[in-house]
Image 1 (cartoon, rainbow, N blue to C red):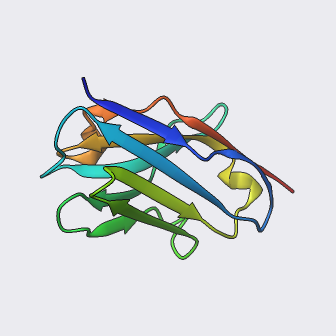
Image 2 (image 1 turned 180 degrees about the vertical axis):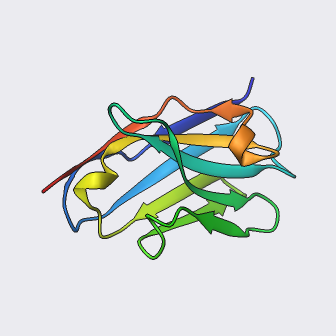
Length: 118
């Protein structure tokens, strides 16, 4: 059974930082892309960042480029999202996902809340 378990969310002031973690288990992720999405109240879920499990190439939404960094530790089967210079508009539930094509992810975590106060 594949599980993606997020952690690291919380309340932070604008300009602050948080690091989210996604612990993956239940299968090998060779050939998969791991990603982060977020959903704010009343809005649709949106793509944030992705990383290829094997090669490590990355991609970001324009809204987070230069502020967020995605990385993975293959030995720990964990994906991270380092979020710096946080803004109130970054407030959302953040979800970890995995898929051969990340925009059609096969697996999702339960989400972790990130709240940025102004």
